[in-house]
Image 1 (tube, rainbow, N blue to C red):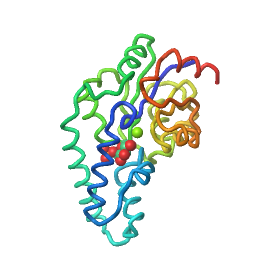
Image 2 (image 1 turned 180 degrees about the vertical axis):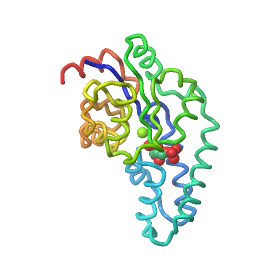
Image 3 (image 1 turned 180 degrees about the horizontal axis):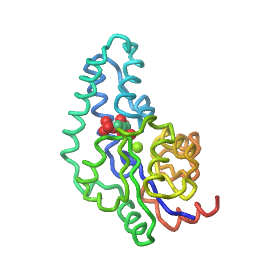
Image 4 (image 1 turned 30 degrees about the horizontal axis):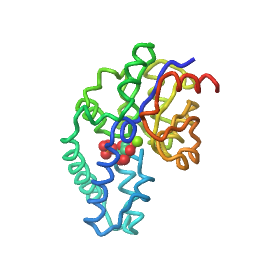
Length: 222
Ligand code: G6P
Ligand code: MG
């Protein structure tokens, strides 16, 4: 029985995935590493430090940077990202999300945030939707980031529900893998090819197609 819906943030609730792309690209270019959208696809859902390590490895310079230098690079990326967030307003919430949150509340289905971003609470504040969430998992306390299932399992535990009674919604390959490995129903929003490869149970091209009755219907069929 459906008891909770767990939302990823960047690329599901709003377009901050684009801000992450811009900030990483600018950091990578500043140390002469090429950075394109195809490579960026593999960073979605991945924590700040793991993303940085992937970028440095991609540029063939992973061993050249000390931990302190890496910290400085991660901080500079985050500073640029936070600067981009200053533009964020409630009207930036993706279509269909607010309606879905309202219906979930009405149906007494619990709502969780399962984002790897340490900026998650700040973004919910800016979008003025933090009051919808029964739990916002703190990614700093999660040992294994996505694609490991830990953040989704932790949300279920915090909400006091069983994993099989949860739906997870994600836009990244790593996120869908994490949901499936947590034994939850995975809804993918994005490119069909990417979502299918990752094993999503239900795929939508845009959040505007997300709708409670459709989700519930597909969930019940599994
Ligand atoms: C999300 C995004 C990633 C980002 C990660 C950490 O999972 O999809 O692109 O790297 O969060 O975000 P943070 O705001 O903590 O750097
Ligand atoms: Mg995402």
